[in-house]
Structures are given as structure tokens and as C-alpha cells.
Amino acid sequence: MDELIYKLKQEIIEALNLEDMTPEDIDENASLFGEGLGLDSIDALELIVLMEKNYGIKLQDPTQGKEIFKSVKVMAEFIQKNRTK
Amino acid sequence: MTNKEIYVLSAKQISIQQPLSEEWMTNPTLYDVPFSRSIDPSFKEYVSPIEARRMGKILKRALATSKEALKESGLETVDAIVTGTGYGCIENTEFFLDALSKEGEQLLKPTYFMQSTHNTISSLIAIQTKNHGYNATYAHKGISFDSALYDAYLQFKLNKINSALVGGHDEMTETFYHILRKGGVMGFDNEICGEAAISVVLSDKQENALCKLAGHKIIHQQGIDSLKEKVANFLQENGKTCSDIDLILTGISGYKENDEAYLSETKTLFGDRPLLKYKNLFGESFTASGIGFYVAAQCLKSGFVPKHLFVNEKDITDKKPNNILIFNRSDGTNYSLTLLEK
Figure 1 (cartoon, rainbow over the protein chains, first blue to last red):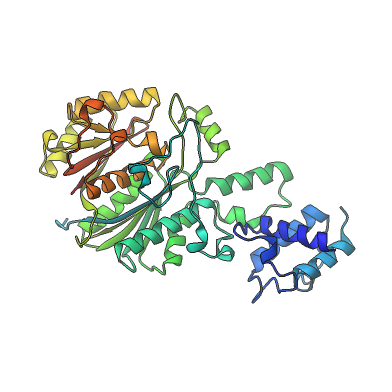
Figure 2 (cartoon, each protein chain N blue to C red):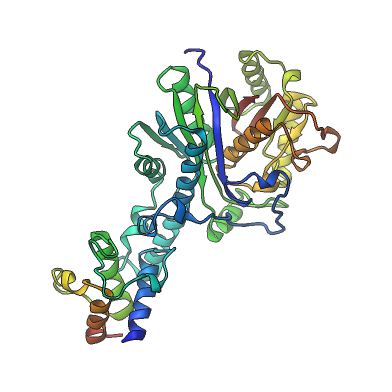
């Protein structure tokens, strides 16, 4: 799981163009939206594209996003359970 | 039109020379490659990584040069923000098209699409500097910076503004460079293709100014005789004759065809006045003339013209220039004249 979390942080940095950040700068338990990393709805779209492109996960219910994107750790757990590639 | 005077309070650049610095005057970075990207400063000082995530390099550079130019000018805000860009956010456009061609329409990233438009430059600077004044972006290829400058110049003269932030910003990716070269646009012989980000603050107040913007004109012309007449009119309007001009800053770049045209036309228009160049250091780009403006302003402020700017060795002198005329030629039909005075 730790390996996936680290890889996911790298992918988030690349997908969201967080050029001056490193995986170490992202707390895996911190909220991705709001007070944590401070992402917004456009970033949510980027993360949906990332999950489909890199892990073959297509979100059927958009409201799921609120729960899945709670933190990097929660996102990694969801990916591990549902990935098709 | 009023006789309102316009002064250049500050001028900042990010290019293939050391960024936000005048090190090029004494210790220039030299290139033996046909294409190079800009040397970037750390952008963390100007914008947080989270805010910067939706900004391509062109926007970060525009923001950094603008904030530095405003800081040096001592002005907290300006009446107008006007920028010029030949091709705008070309890198994000390229990312978007690349993804479209490789992966189809299903998995396109929204950010690249949003940030691939030209108008994001002036508006971003306005948002970041909390400016609610006049805001415009000009996209006119090789005279983009000149067009932005002309807009600001006219608004000063019409007494509509007392200060302005004028910029010229262009990116050059490797793919774009190859396309331009293939299309016969630039990148031939000894010409270096680079990137340019330039921001200048203009004001009607003279205090601590680098120099004065005495005149500016854009000319669309196809014949040398008519061009000669318009250049003579421009000089006359500014109370000058050819012999009053100390230095002519040209776009001589190392591309034989371009350089021959410059040499021939300047000979006809200005006789044997000393010629300068800057593209040998800063490279060719669509807003290179903005860099020319910056170079001329810094030379007038410091009273020092580096030897490596002179086109002909015989003209090299330690004499402090009182004025520099920037002669920009684009596509052989569009010209701009910008007269800067001490």
C-alpha cells in the first residue's frame, strides 16, 4: 500500500501540475479538498481522468467522488480494490 | 491628443539570459544550439504551488516579471494592463492536442484546454495584482508587444491613463520550434530561437525612470520609398533628424535573409547611423521586440552599451547614448519604431 500511495502522490503532482511540490509535501491523511491540499472541482475532474487512464476505474456514480477523494490514503485504498489495470 | 510625457519606470525580463537580471550586459550566457528554453527563476516567491498548478510556464513568467516590474516602479497598481503575445499559451495547447491525438476525446484534461487561450495572460496579472483597470491582450505575431505598447501609448496621449503595465510574452517548445522552422518562419542559419517574457511599467511621473518613451509607431508597409517617408515623418514628429539618433536597435538575428533585409533597409532609412542587435543574446521569438525595448531602456539607464550589442566593430564606443531608436521588422510588411530617450 505504501508503494501505491507514493506512486499516487507522484501521479497527482503530475496530473495537477504541482511542479514545485514533492510527494513528501503531501500528507496522505490530509483532506484533498478544502483545508488540506486545497483542491477544487476542476481538480476532481483531473483525478477522475487519472483514475480511468492509469487504473481503468470508471466512476459510475459521480457522488462517490466526495468519499473517494477524501485523502490520498482513501483514494489509494479505493484504487487497490477496484483497479482493472 | 495631449503632450503628456511617458516614462519607463522599470523593465524586467525572463529569457535565455539570466532571469530578472542585467548580467547579460557584462557576462552574457552564450549558446551554440539553435533552440533553447528560458532560464526560469524559482516561481515559489511569486505564486504558491497550489495557485500555480493551472499556470503554464508563460503565465508564471508573466506573473514574475510583472510583479518585479511593479515592485521596482514603486507603484502598487496601474491604470492599465496590456500585453502582447504571438501565440499565447502554446505549450498547454500542445499538451491538449497531443492528448487528443493519442487518446481521443474521452480522457481529455480540462486544465490544458482552459489554459490554452491567449487572453489568460493579462487577466491573470490583473487578478494576481488585484487590478480592476483596463485590460487587453494583443496577438499579432511579430508586432504583438509593439501593438500592446501602442495601445498604452495612445491611452496616455489621450489622457485616459497615467500609468500602465505593458508586457510581451511567448513560449517556444521544441515541437513548435520544429514546426516554425519547417514552415520557413524562423530558426535558420545562425539564428537562435528562444523564449521571451518582458514586463515594463510606464508612467507620466519621471522620478527614478529608466528613460523616456518619446515616440512609438506601427507601420504596415510594402515599399521602401513609402516606408522612408513614414520614418522621416516619425522623426520629424519627434523633433529629430537621422543624425540626432545615437543608436538604432535592430532585429538582426543571424538568419542571413533577415539580416540582409535589416542592413539594406537601415542603410536606406538611417544612412550610416550605428546599429545594435540583441537577438544574438536573447534569441528570436514573436515578442523579441519587447526584449529590444528592455535592452534599450537598460542601456540608457546605465549609460553603458555592451560591445557585444554593436553590429559593426567600427561603431563601438564608450559614449553614453542620449537616445535609442528601436527598429522592428516583422514579415517584411509590419514595422515598428520606438524612440527611447534618456
